[in-house]
Image 1 (cartoon, rainbow, N blue to C red):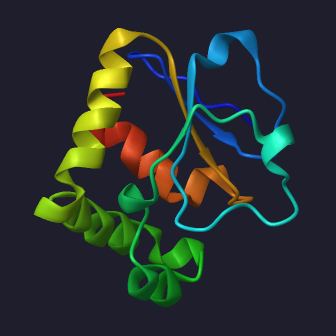
Image 2: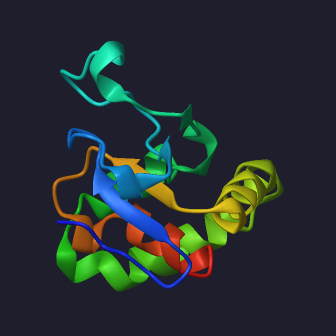
Length: 122
């Protein structure tokens, strides 16, 4: 599933093959996607620091019933000074052209990338 938004920020799975419309492809997970070799990845960057904290990921457990609270907590984490540089980098990339946020999460509708895309103005 591809989610496309007004500012050309897309959300896709890291395992999906690249598409011409992807633009700059950025992995925004803390961990490297299981089973994906670097030569097959086709990522332009990997910004680990913008991923949800380990504590938040463990609490959430990708339970759709917790998604709204997860989104609020994740937005609070994105405002943290330690993440400002990574978020600013993504804003710069989004302003330059198409940007694709990549994650290994299966459920893109309940993934942190959806929240992140919205925070980038998408």
